[in-house]
Amino acid sequence: MKKLIFSIAALVAAVLPSDAQLLYKISGNGLKKDSYIMGTFHLADGTFIDKVPGAVEAINSTDQVCGELVMSVTSNPDSVALLTQKQLLPDGKTIKDVLTPEQFAKLDKYAEKVLGAPLSNPMLFAQIGKMSPAALTNTFTLLSYMKRDKHQVNPQNAVDADFQTRALAAGKGVMGFETVSYQANVLFGTPIERQIVQMMCLVNDPEYYDMMTDKLVEAYYTHDLDRVNEVMNMKVEGECDDTPEERDALLTNRNNNWVKVMPSIMSQKPTLFVVGAGHLLGERGVITQLRNAGYKVEGTYKKEDIK
Image (cartoon, rainbow, N blue to C red):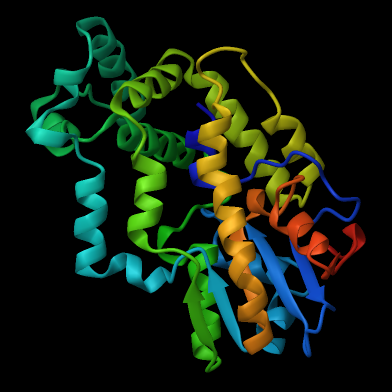
């Protein structure tokens, strides 16, 4: 179930280095110039960049920014069409077709709490009734968070995109590790039966998942990844917990893919990598893998430097 939180925040951590923070310098192992890696919360406003010590300097001292995606690509017509299609149920089905009457009744009531109207409302059902359970879970979690948000989420100026916007404005390059299609498959490609289970976990206990999301967000904004680790290791000991395979698909496999290409990218141009903070940490996180490959990866600031 935590996949819905990972997909928004990507903040899970398993084993934290002693210098855990948001921005790291990568050096050594034959690099002629330093590169950097920044962990983000994907809904943080772009102005948060100015509150991370050294982040602006990292943009200025590198030749390009590499994100999970090239963010400008996500808004082109082909990408929008692809993402829309990936979030729909197959064969023209509606969410009512794949749920039991009891499940739909619970979802109907939950939708009214979050959106102010039950899902059975004809106008609302016409808008989102054909969305897959995973897409509905993602949508409801996001909208619920935005209603409670203290940090003023601004989808038009999200932090990952703003890093790339600033780089382009400075005449620097922008690239991405993944395609829109790949990320859409990660987020919405789980079998429908499992999507239903995960959606009903949210519907049946929304307060728990709201609490987890809020604690993660506050930990991120205070640069407290030890607290992130503590929250993300909470379990309910049941089908609502993500399986090892689901966690691998969302985090570990992608970490492995990125670390394979990072040496080549860094050797060609000093680069600022900008990815979800959860990808940085843990025994199979990007930082540990880079260190194991012979790079020096070190935090760039101390707690007293935080703005």
